[in-house]
Image (cartoon, rainbow, N blue to C red):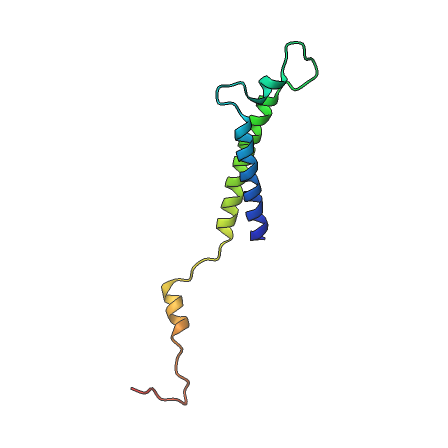
Length: 97
């Protein structure tokens, strides 16, 4: 399950990089390339779609990262580790002290 979640984060990260490269930092971006004044039924809301896609991919990365973190096994307390390493002597054996 952790491998699947890690693959989702990896793919989302790659897609996020590509989406950010498509955007124009000065405003035009992909929508200015496709939009024309006479275009009636074409791509009109590309900027909004790219913006939503950016935030969605970032949200997916954050949520899946939190899920992966929560699923990690909890470390044992020092007392529990000490109790596991020290094995009591069996009743028939005497200590060598």
